[in-house]
Length: 192
Picture 1 (cartoon, rainbow, N blue to C red):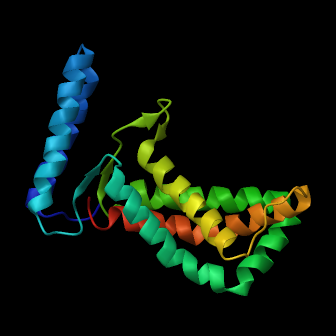
Picture 2: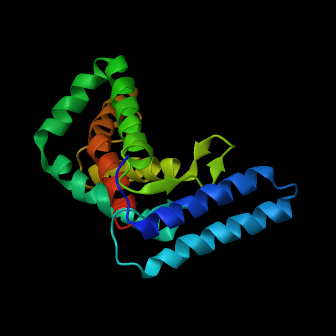
């Protein structure tokens, strides 16, 4: 575990205690109050100019914008590189490679957000009680940016031909990998 400044450890410890409290309170109203306290603690650190070592909680409009920017920074080079299309066509011939490509991208996002410890990323909300909202937001943002960018620049084509749609999806999956990394880094590094 990396060394954190003392004031960041205080916020991290506060979040630990608030998460424990959220688990033991009896009513939805009490849980709501604990979540409001967590939001207030996250907002209180916004005055601190530090980039690393902050507690990241929630996923909002700013996080979405940061994820889009990170996706574009990492994805534009993929869109202008011919190897993206070649790699996409290759994995279109091997469906298991497609699954491996997407799974690898998602695993890298999980690693960046929750394992690498760039920031102290906390799960604020889960979709269907399972998928962290930040994970879904970052990966879906990268996927949407990949499809939009490659479609807009004419690198993929969505038609009624299933083989062409599959190939386009595979090309987008290749671009999705670095875009997902960029979205995750773009989201958490500013520390919001």
